[in-house]
Amino acid sequence: MKSNITCQQFPRNMVEKMCIKNEEGIEDDLTTLDRKALLQQGFADSPYKALRSARKYDAEVVAAEKKKQTVAEQVMIDHLSRAVISDPGQNVVNGKQSTHILSDPNMAPLRFRKRTLHETKIKTHSTLTENVLSNKLQFDGRIISRNGHDTCRELVGFFFTHDQSLTVYEYRKFGKNRTNVLPFIKKNIYRHQCGRRKGKQYQLGDFYIDADLTFLTSDHPSLPESTKENQLLILRITNIDRIALDSLKAASKEQQDGETSQEGSDKQVFKAVQDVLKVKLQKRGVRVLTGLRKYFQQLDKKGGGLLDKEDFKQALKLFHLEVPEKDFESLWLILSDDGRNKVDYGAFRRAIIGEMNEYRKSFVRKAFMKLDFNKTGSVSITDIRKCYCANKHPQVLSGHSTEEEIKSSFLETLKDACSKSEEVSYCEFEDYYEGLSMGIIEDEDFVNIICTPWGM
Image (cartoon, rainbow, N blue to C red):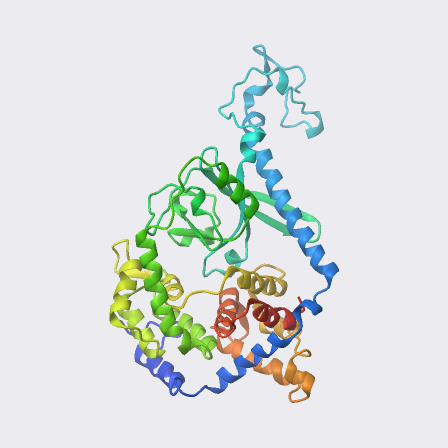
């Protein structure tokens, strides 16, 4: 382990002393920051269903369905007609240049460029029909990344059963009326790039909520530059067309792979570790989860997101998250299955602590995207202060606290979770609510905690 590896160029022993100082007494007593963070759980008592307007909810459902329909239509257009329309030979009719096309089509207005596809003798490689392409499974996805802008991209994917291929499109909205739908992952047959199924082709059984799809970024040169910083692109399925999934499974003649014994064993290892830490994190989850992220970033001198075994052991010790040695070794063998002695610290943290479900995360993303209207991946504390509303907090309603006191408590704990004092990235925002989520049993209680102060 080397010294001078923090982002602020502090010696490592100083970083450790700072962490130890912050963690003193946490197993028995909560710190002031813990108590202030827990104030947010008071919003769980807000009548969420009554607060939401039925008209607003219906409008959101309609908008979501319209977005999915727009993407689905673009996929059909791309794969039914692009092969023919883009073929320069289509202008040839019976061996002669078509008279319907102006001599210099590149200079002519689009309205004068006529197509005579019914007369062409061009044979395309594509034999896809609308019926064939209709046998597809549609799903929503998000990128697992430390880049806030990438994590908020709206992705819609399709898995086609006729050839086991898949494609992913990105839906982008500009202002109120302008939208853009473009391929993010081109249509092709792909294979798992990590885990127990590495090298196996994707099939219908691999698609379900919380499933991860992995791709090599080197195979996709058109990806945004920010995603190419990592060797793997990981897409998490957040929602899926269950009706289509059940129908396709019923019609499929192929035997879908179920969970292998190795995958089942892996889940048991993860659950054993998570159960040990769950009780410890129930009331101090915000401070520990955000502290772990900052600590890992400080150790990650090269910025690649990879750390070795001793780094993780030391982090767990500093934050009083020790697990049995046997469980740790089993977990490490699973995560480092590629033969390297380093593991992505995001994957490590998800393995030992777990994650809130995608239903909860959808509301966290929605709240952040409401704040980050420019889609930069980060928002200023000033904007957060303007948008955060505490007037429906139980302590405010009862008169025990003022709106400003509740707001100040929230901002203080949120700023403590951030690497920059006046700016909050999406990852930091998500970590904050990930920590709160650990103490909330019911999904609707957690939704209240998100929706009430952010006016959703």
